Length: 207
Image (cartoon, rainbow, N blue to C red; front, top):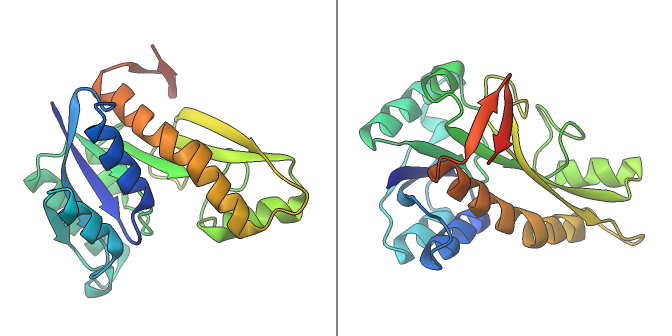
């Protein structure tokens, strides 16, 4: 069983999707062994506690810069013997010290169809607002590996939803979470733990 460490910063809805999928036996070959939060008192920590998963809080505000913070995260990942790292609403971009230590072993979910509406500054409702302002007819989410550039790692899975004429950023966010993120993130995690993802020429292929 691979040790899965989930990084969170907020409510933890994607964490809950992973917890629920694991309970249903849908994550094969892996187990969530720790949750690391960048903030104290967030609801994701309560979700971890309710599921009996140990958690660690490493507050971003306690560190002078992102490099120092990334080093602290890396040290904790090593302590936890992390084999897969999942970013589930984790609002800090990790430095190269982390991405180079875990190549093709960090998975993130981005709430748009990469390469659209992604990169630095595109997070949360900002992504959906930008998509609606552009007038897209479909949007969705991308599950991808994390590298040293924001939202630029190899794509594992993508899923799409139709955009209604009266869509708001909030309604689109909810639609994508329910129909894509909460389904595909656990699926991607299971694929990784089952060794069913192959990397070739920087692209991810699912067996």
